[in-house]
Length: 344
Ligand SMILES: [Fe+2]
Image (cartoon, rainbow, N blue to C red; front, side, top):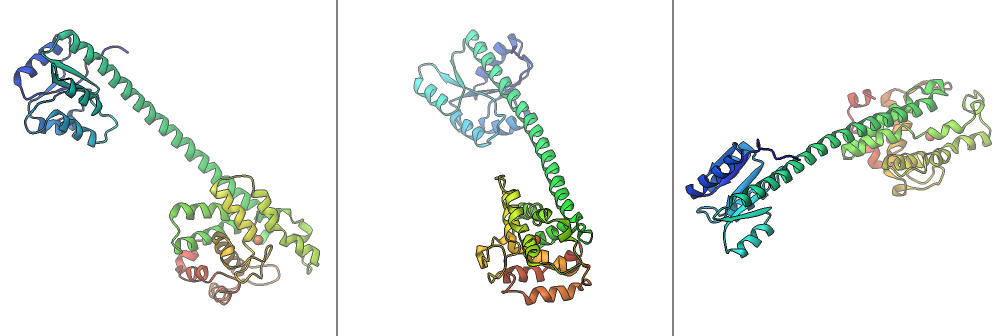
């Protein structure tokens, strides 16, 4: 990396003579963009306005000494903070060591030696240039990673929605059902105080809640006749089959989807299936989807019955509170405004 003579250097020293000497030495070597400060209290403002590539900082100054200024600079927690070179008197080894251990990158001693000054300045400007380059590369890299992550999230959302739709598609009257159930589930979760990232996760996971229904043969699924016990058992088995299909991925979303699939037909009082588990043993996400699923089914038309009105369906859900459904989930559901429900 070549020496950058365009670099901006801030020099802080209360002695005008020292400022002049340093300015002359640096100017002789082509460094023209020099900012001279005799009042150490102005360093922070000057740094923020001019963004120098290197700071030469005198140690012994009135008001704020070099260590105090260095501490102020470090308190900015600015990742672009350039190297600081402490200016110390000769024979002050203690201060030199202290300067280095306080975060100064180097020190120069008075009286100044031209060759030493220029060598140190050049070295540290190279350090600063490498540092700036690294930060720029990180910015580009982070933007690229964020873009890829966004792309993957988009694909994930699309695939989850597609999978839910494909399953619902087998039964003509269930078109769009998985997204409506997921939408209702998200509203309930928000009402229960879930944070938005968890609500969004539930919205995805809930769309897969009935994925196991794809294992049920069409002659059973579309049968207009009352079903025999073994056919009913095959339908009930969709909860376990779905959970098996969704297993094997340890992302939080897929684990939630697996729990929902397995437990969305469990009842609060333990009378549901497949496990007959009760109360808090049923994951909350599944308790939420259970309410959303039943409500959505009640307000939808089916081959063997007409759709209930929303009020009738709400009354039905309310009646199931504490037996079929978690009372807290029902309370949250009933608190959702009509226009919220209508949006799903
Ligand atoms: Fe189901």
